[in-house]
Image (cartoon, rainbow, N blue to C red; front, side):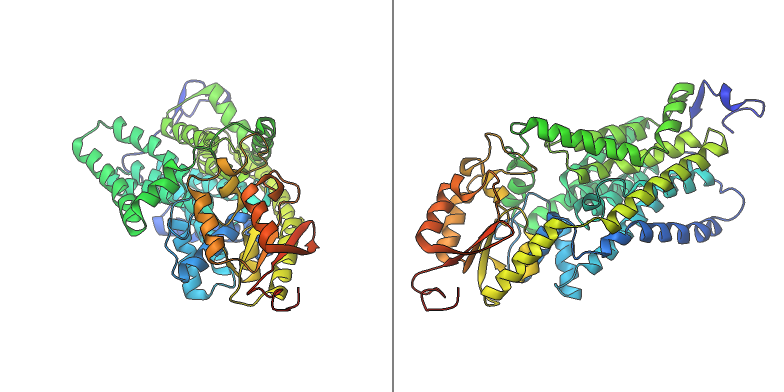
Length: 507
């Protein structure tokens, strides 16, 4: 017990939140019955909270980018050579595998996998909390996590994208480290990094757990081997130099804080406030316990701190970055609630459930104007091109390629890679010279070798408009003419010998 029987909740000052028990004995029955009762509840919660994800074909440009990458890989593309992005390979491979098994016309299997990923994360958090603080704390951790897991803009929480598949890897890393399985912990950290670079932040609390028990060469070696093996294998399975460039060294301009500082900071504060509202049931008990008790769960605070540092990395503060904070928040909530009166747990779950209902309704009812715009563009492109034609969408919505079922004319699927435009950045660091190093010569060669049948300028007044991009402006002036507008986007058709217009085709 954490306090003598005579201690009242108000006299909890000086209590210590305990660390892992050396030998956990389940309360009130066998281990199996606990999970038989709890797993159906967690599965139902996972399905309910991700119900909005099935309403739309896709939720954000990340899903669109991954879908287009998977198609390019299926057509013989090579990752980090003819198929490029600033992300590690694990999730693109996951999309490619799903498309190979179920076809490339739907993301439903990946949405189902995202539900499974959230359920697995919750199960691992239950196991972590249960080993430390008992059965009730385990249930609390799992339920709280799933309730807050959609506590951001639906485009950030409902997408089957990088962070959702990263989270079970980070939770697995902590689960393995908690049990001193250092090789497996290293492998889980590697998988988190290979899902998204910031997933590697969980290495910090894992290393702390190694050091807490006294560092031995054997433990450190197992952790290093588990971490290095999968990363090295991923590099060798792709292009090693391309892997290093696209995942580590090639994003200097993207990570710069220069450009639209107030806009970016405002987005960061808004997303932090939205997450705080989603966690309104958790924050008060955590704050109360901080005031009345000494917390011994240092690795959980370190996990939260390293995740917060990962959110800050890159200075963009997109909402989906904040998903990384949710597992440690749920565990800290369970840690606080298990030393407070039971009614505080009921209150925390009730408040979290009400907040979850609001976010669930938001996801189910909110309109998707950008998806509707991309769908209209895709319909226009399909009507004006043949299935084997290549097209170029000059914008930041690569999902249009997938919706139109047309191959991209370039490996660079967004204007952001070529101009450094991202997340509302409209300051001085947007333009050709701020694009990915070496991208423009490759891009010009691609368009010269395989000119796109259509170019769709979807900049709509953004700072990467062709008027501010000389190379693209010259291309359009020499070989293309505008034929129509779709919701502010300008559709250009190729003219001259060999083009549909030059042959008298309908433009």
